[in-house]
Image 1 (cartoon, rainbow, N blue to C red):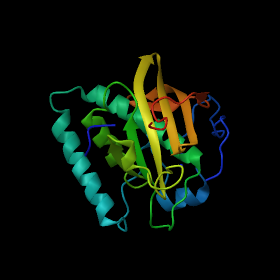
Image 2: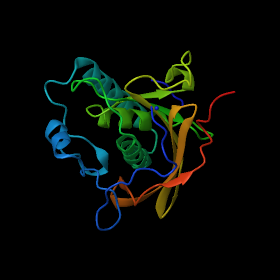
Image 3: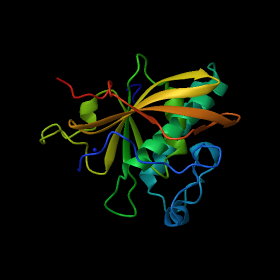
Length: 223
C-alpha cells in the first residue's frame, strides 16, 4: 500500500445530499435496492461484514489492510487514528455517492483512487482502516502520483473507467472538523469542496449539511 497521496460538464455546486433533521448526513440514507444489495451502513460509514460471495481479491485486500492496521497502531495514537479514519471515510462516501459513478456489472465495485493534497501523507494506519472498512462498497487505492488514476494518453486525461480520483486534505478540528476534498474527472472537470463534520459518537463523525464549493488546488492538471 502506498504511503501517499471523472463525461458531461458538472456545475460548481455539488449535488444536494439528503440530511437528517439535524443537518448531518445519514450514511444509511441510500436507495432501497442498494440497501438490499449491501445492507445498511453502520454509524461512521462502516459497512456490514462481507457476504460469502465477495470476490476473493477484495477480501484479501481487507485482510491485509487489517493486518497492517493492527501492526501499525501499536505505539501510535489509536483514538486519533479511529477518529481521523471516520472523518475521511464519511467524506469519501459523500464525494463518491454525489458523483453518480457507475460500474459495468453488479459484481463490480467502483475504484476510488485517493491522493493526499496536504503537506503530509495520510498515515498508513488510517489508510488501512479506510480500506478495510469500505472493502465491500469500494476498492480503495491510495496513490502517490495522479497518473496512476488517469488515462494520460486520452484527450482530457480522464480517470480510468469505473473509477474516481479523490483528493483529501488535512483535518482541522476545533469542535467541528473541516476537510478540503477534491474530485477529478478530467483536466476540464475538477471540483473542490470544504466539508464540515460533527462528532456523533466516540470516533464517529458525520457530514454536516452540504459541502461548500471551493477552488480546487491539489488535483489541478499537471503542467
